[in-house]
Amino acid sequence: MGNPQHYSIELPSRCLDLINGLWSAASNLYGGAHPDLGPLTSTFLVSMSMPILNIPLERIERQIDKNDGEAYADDRHLNPEAVEAFMKVIRKGKLGDAPFYKDGTWRFHPLRDGPFPNISDGLPDSLAEALESEDAIKAARVMPASQWVSLLRNAMAHGGIAYLDENGRSRHGTPVKMFAFVSGKYGKPKCEFADAACRFGMGKLDGLNFLRISEDDYRSFLGDWVAWLVASKIAKQAAA
Image 1 (spheres, rainbow, N blue to C red):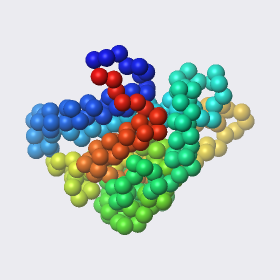
Image 2: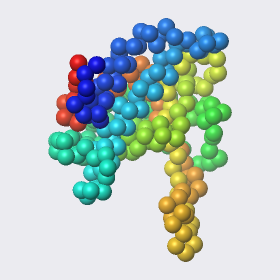
Image 3: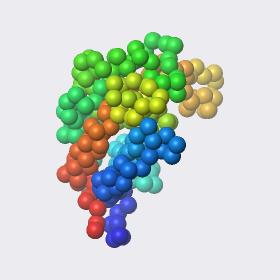
Image 4: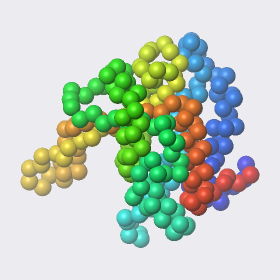
């Protein structure tokens, strides 16, 4: 393996190469005593997708509003075009207009009326039905790309991922065919005096945001995402 020219710039392409190169092997690996649950492709795909999405966002997009010297992992100086691409597509654009978007693959449903479900108990059928609707496809298409990517980042960081079957349901003992990414929406805490811990904390849970995508479409999306990163000079193809 060659020495990377730059860790973060080449990492998305390297991770995608690992997904494509090892997919056949992952397809032949099963979960020990539960082969009926299908191969470990879902675990492999979600795990490898985290750096593909998060590293460029953390080291470029999340640094855009900072001054020089305020960040220790800031790649903005490597290519100004990368900043412009993130500003145009992520900060100011809608998901449906993004180069890596394919209509019908992403579905979005916001839930604002409690009580809110605990996804460790599975996705309620009412939410599964909402995510199956044409309204969910339209909602994803028109949602701000900044909201979409924040939802994904939050779900990955806090474990807000639910495995679903081919019908978009939480059915234990069935192979995974879809993912639901779930992010909480919190109100501002009510603080007394100048309590810093309170001011920088979270208030009560005001809602949940749900994104759904099939495993096949998610893998395809990662390829389109990396292709956009490379075309926009946000990332580079991995060295040999």
